[in-house]
Length: 98
Image 1 (cartoon, rainbow, N blue to C red):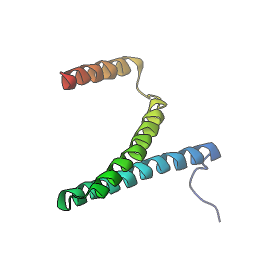
Image 2 (cartoon, rainbow, N blue to C red; image 1 turned 180 degrees about the vertical axis):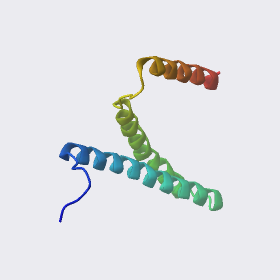
Image 3 (cartoon, one colour; image 1 turned 90 degrees about the horizontal axis):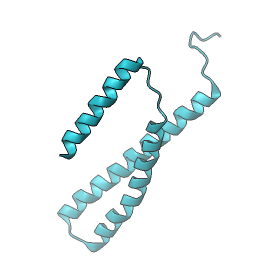
Image 4 (spheres, one colour; image 1 turned 45 degrees about the vertical axis):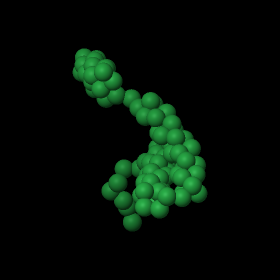
């Protein structure tokens, strides 16, 4: 039985699996943190607050790893459009911070 799908390189499959792991890890810790915030609002307890604060460390780790991964992305835009994209992004960031 032949497949009509193009073969995928093993390196690309591994990279896709790593990306899925990063996104699912961030999604999981974000969900847990959101539930703990709701629980803390409904039931004030120091234990819940400490668990919530301890969830911030893995959350920061996943955000850091995802930021590293997005830094490796390569643009497919032509050079003139890429320069415009960067200029717009810098202007937007400046306006947001202001």
